[in-house]
Length: 335
Ligand code: SAM
Ligand code: SF4
Image (cartoon, rainbow, N blue to C red; front, side, top):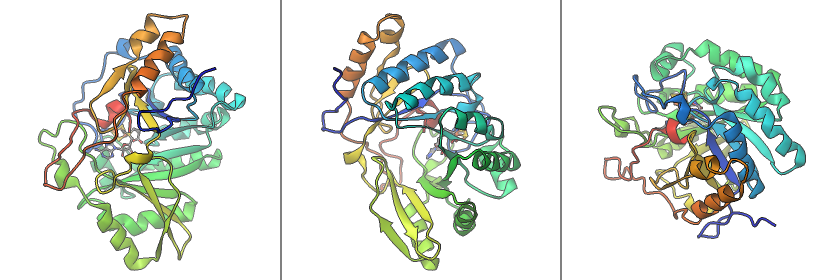
């Protein structure tokens, strides 16, 4: 019998987020620099290795798998991987297979994703203004993403929008974005910008817009009711009583959510990060590659890694600098 994964703080680990590529067709200003250097293709886990890795986690009790990146849907033949995971949904071992995407390729892949058993997608969209969208994503085009949203909903996928709250950028869109989502039956979650990546001349503290402030502004127009539901992650939810709509807030910097953390993250090269906000990681690739026909060493390496999951992160903007900052870009660990 395989015992479930329990970390040193008695938290069961049932949720794995997997970055399947560090590449992306956008260059969002808070995520990447314009001239990113990407990993050599040979360093990436192959699709077969990704399957083996995820299957090992599922065998150890992971119930939810979120595929991310970079942009997961730009990885070549990625549908083969999704289709491979269908067997774990069908066996009941896996409860949910889902992804976070910028939406650019959804028009092409929505139906195939649904056929593979995906039922929900998170789409990142910070603005409904074409010019602002081009500015914040550098390379993205809004109409393509809007067509992706349509395709996803047509295919029967539930869509949640994730918007990064950016000071002086989308502050004026809290109501338009809420109304856009309400009209389409989509949930909306706001994310505080996090101090990921080397800041260089990018001013992450300057981009920071506290969700406490955003929430206060929402409350000027709507009656907000706190919802008790938690996902084991950093999101908290409110309901707008006038519309019934649910709005989420991901506030790693103003709330401590670590006590109920149920997740770990794997990079596209097979490094397991036990906490998004800490540098500590375990490289699972040797256990995978050195034992092509035996998963026991891989399972052992996973257990060993989980035994080192830290209690929490140390992000803190309170002293007007990005304390607790980690040097990785979000696209590396997978947001
Ligand atoms: N490319 C996909 C997308 O954009 O949805 C998946 C990967 S992206 C790294 C995952 C999420 O991380 C996106 O919602 C993005 O907005 C968010 N993100 C990226 N950099 C961030 C940062 N510095 N702070 C907060 N969220 C960030
Ligand atoms: Fe690409 Fe997503 Fe990062 Fe934007 S947030 S650059 S879409 S990986």
